[in-house]
Image (cartoon, rainbow, N blue to C red; front, side, top):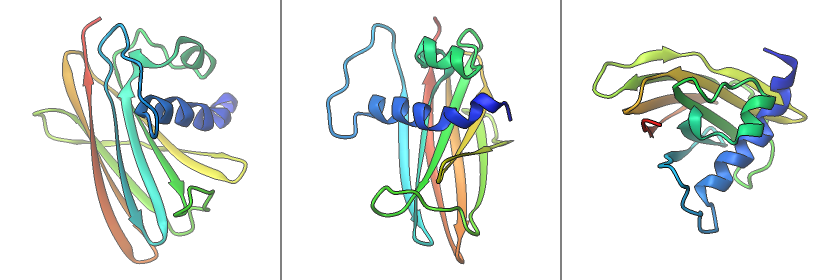
Length: 158
């Protein structure tokens, strides 16, 4: 993991969550954008999986953290928090992820663990050529409990 990756998570999470419009309307972008999110609770932890096209990352954010927006593909961010949205150590958290361009079969997706202060998040990048629907599937196990979540991101030609 590159040293600058340690700062990626909070900024990327803010970009994804603000784009998801948690409590506020989202401005319609000039080009089609696709951001998806799914949330599950497992073993006292709340996990949110957010995904978007790499091309839709803010240019400054992409440049600062080494994402080349000219490369096609999708990004998956999995955040780990308690029920109040506060930091939660991973404990015995086990995460696995797959990704696929629909209708192809899923392939394993490597998730990089990123810890910033007391926040723990996971990022995965899946290369894909637009137009495409990229489906992410995440399985989480913690404290003997298991949960699954899916998110799908649309990639559009530029």
